[in-house]
Image (cartoon, rainbow, N blue to C red; front, top):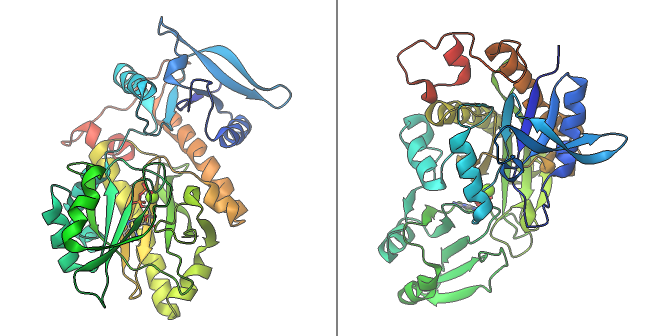
Length: 394
Ligand SMILES: Nc1ncnc2c1ncn2[C@@H]1O[C@H](COP(=O)(O)OP(=O)(O)O)[C@@H](O)[C@H]1O
Ligand SMILES: [Mg+2]
């Protein structure tokens, strides 16, 4: 019997067919092979116009990477990150046309929609910073009255791009300090401005309906650098959500964001938290609350938006030990664990999606290659698309 085939779907970064995360995919392919899972990488641009085959990227230890025409895979692992171009339009068309296929994960929504969805559940509300969608400057002024620190973030942003931090200066009435990064992630020169001038300063940023205005959490360490945590939750080989690992991140000097791609540094979580929260009991409590939060957010988002196989949560912990969810990332990088030398966690971060894919295949298919059928009938009152794969199978 031939092996089940998993297609990792990604997007080229440019016209020269450059790929992100090639080394992760190579490891996934090799680990998949050990487990009887045949994996190749493709992009929507590699689908033959006839729609029957794909010019896949395959990896062999002896030959390295090469291209081969392959039939459509049994399952798709969608790793496509947002781009503003034709390639992304092609992806949307692919998801539409081949939506009936077996996807390990479906796309999530923008930061504002996710925030609204999560705020509907009371257990999550205490972990969400106050957030509104930018309409006009009155939103910024109102938030700055309630909180001396705010963040402005694009609803479709990634990697710390286009994020501003505005802080009231306590010693000078109506003055604020504006810091942040532009759309290309370059650190902008910090500016001290009067509140009445803030509107004209922000005018060209075009924020209406495109930005969040969010309560800021004080996260500056004694060395002046900001910090937060990256938590990875994944589905395991039994189809259940599990915490894979959590790592600390410390922003670059003069940066208001901690993202690694913006020069941030990865630090083991316990080491970072020890500097911030001195009480050991409180640290233990934070760890267990954060884990429960991660699992329940993943479960809830999957119930709402359809199948998911992994999520990374950006978590902030304030000086009192309160946990805030800053962002949910549906296409997480895993390198934070490699950078802090947590090899076992890094290995698990790479292999869990493969174990999960095998679980999905075992539970949903009859063994005709490339012809996937649901064997167990869908029952129950909830709309199938809104229930997790595991609960659908029960
Ligand atoms: N409300 C906030 N309070 C304090 N820091 C924040 C806040 N929101 C974001 N940040 C900082 O900015 C970084 C990037 O923000 P995030 O919402 O994760 O957007 P991105 O998609 O660009 O990663 C966070 O990791 C954190 O360091
Ligand atoms: Mg983030």
